[in-house]
Image (cartoon, rainbow, N blue to C red; front, side, top):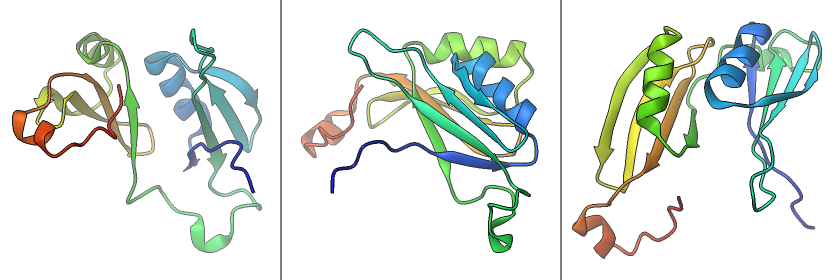
Length: 143
């Protein structure tokens, strides 16, 4: 078996607001839009890479009843070129900022936001990791 594709899907009762949040703030484009599902994707970068995100109506019949709840226990993480510029844009859009940009020991400058569903969104840019973290050989964290 070969894994072909993987992407997160948010359960939401706020499809239009959720769609618009990720389109306006992170530059996703709408690939499919209906009353029960929204497919978002970024334009291809120079290497042909694309990021995808789904938004599924939490009350839709395809969602089993025990799972028809607000998202919890998950953080969506996005790595961008300039988290500080995105912070300015988030504030301009009056998006709730949980934590403003700060350099983290693991080599990211990170801010935390919440999306229209109350989901925690981690947005970061590469920065210099601490010497202690570099000595751990944590090369799995990519830019």
